[in-house]
Image 1: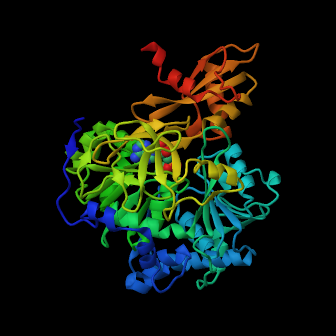
Image 2: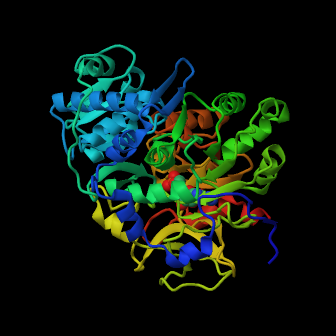
Image 3: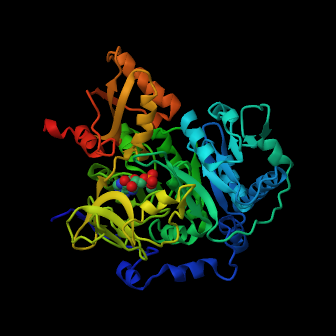
Length: 561
Ligand code: WTA
């Protein structure tokens, strides 16, 4: 099969000889190299003190560009803030193993709280800012979080009376309420010296809730020992160099915003940009120019929105510092690739991975040809395959389950409180079954072919159909509901809901709007169905679950072609 090929880039890349590394590399060695003599397992040491001890104390760690605030922190300044927050947690009686939820917009307080908590051995539970009451409550209850950092606006979505374990609430903004502490005055009063809580590499670092197809989101447990995996991929895939300014646009409510938003670049002592506020094509380009961003990690929907804003927008800015652009989360379409080549003279490097894998798995590399439409090749040290439903490896061009041989450093180690769910990923030993469909070509390049289950990917954000169905069915007008992803030119997929109405209700645009708001205010705006269709019944499998295959067929409008 002929695929358009974009040739390997000339130049000095961190990874120059892919095939040789694939043969010779194993993670054990890089783990030894990463931890070195120090053997300190706490990842906050590796992103702060290690850099400071290497003489990077005065280097900028974080540029923050918010709508109302612009700040910068050197590694030493960041370390002092982190220590202060760590001491606040001590004072509150919080310590190793306690869960602390961070429900915040992208602001410096979020990053400081994350590392301060980790330094004291607490386990961070990131909650995406756009989540509404049901989703927030579910995550706080399931993780039995003892502490929460949020702001006064977001606190309105936290049903405190229903969360008996939640003892400490720190607010970063918006005044104080009974039973809450002021983040800034507590941090202001605290000492800027703090020691580490000793942790093991296998101790939990954060619990990230990720949508599943048929059930509540799963709390994926990631451990301190993910660090060497992030370190290696930041080097080879992101090609990070000492003088780079790195901007990963993802929110730390999602895996990308944690793993590559700050942990991976800081493991290399690289300067990170964080932009607060909403997406805006012109502002994004302005920020790329202002901070002279050299490595940019974003998602196809964002690229498409910038393209849609037109050359009058992106063409106005001097973006020639950009030397490496990467993409994640959804299929990188050809139009986006062509745009990047024309606008910046460089291709975009696609990376495939998941919340479960914790680090980049299958990627395009600067030293290799890119085949358009392919997610690339496995990171050295990673064995990927396409397997059938019994776990047998399939030959090239056969579509099957995209699987990874278990045992890489950043792999999620458990599902919080539900080990059985975790084991389901490994039902076809020795494979981790991703839930994605794919095929491979004769050169070992992989091609993503959508989800096997019904998980929806809208604008790169992962939405569980079950959660949306549950919410819709709580509305008096809805007797039954089935939700699927419908292809969309800009967002990749949109959430489409098929509903059966209860007697006495008739369909109208007003009711559609009401249902949209109902999901939006209960669950999250990104999970709210953009389209509805009324049906007589929702197809079910013999065990009574929504038949996701039939629903997907409906959403693809297969019958209408
Ligand atoms: C999808 C995001 C196409 C895939 C890091 C996966 C992709 C899900 C790509 C994980 C890509 C991720 N091309 N699809 N390059 N990367 N996906 O957990 O379906 O939010 O299973 O992690 O996103 O989404 P998650």
